[in-house]
Image 1 (cartoon, rainbow, N blue to C red):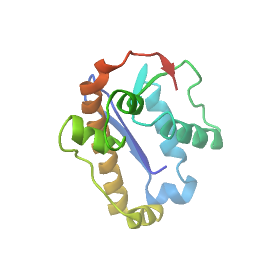
Image 2: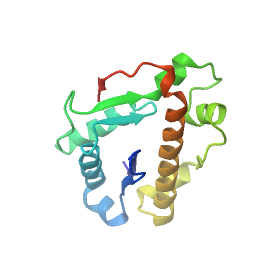
Image 3: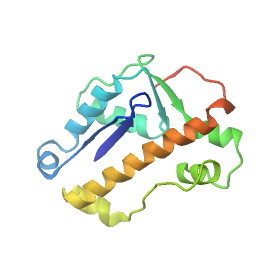
Image 4: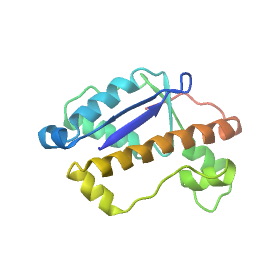
Length: 160
């Protein structure tokens, strides 16, 4: 995991951490996973887009690999707006960018090819910075989309 971004909707602060060449060589993504877990614990609820099937299982897997204390069941609530988009709207694709473009406006999302990922694995600063910017834009789009669609589904107290 190269980086993460978590936006606090109350303060507009974006909590984030990213790997660098030195930490990749030393312990891969361990410090990013540690930071993510620490920052997740600052919240009562998180909102994701397809996080129930990808992001959270991925972070949980990496935390378990590193023997880090991932939040247990019912310690953090989770809303995955992918399911609201999929079940309450009819859009030609259920991707975050498509949902945002259809329901909110032009997405901020950036696009990049495999070369960024490959160079990021080597600790390339420019590639890692681009990936972090991509993640920051994702959480901004996610929050705006959530604000537009949240009233179309019942709030459920699902756990991570």
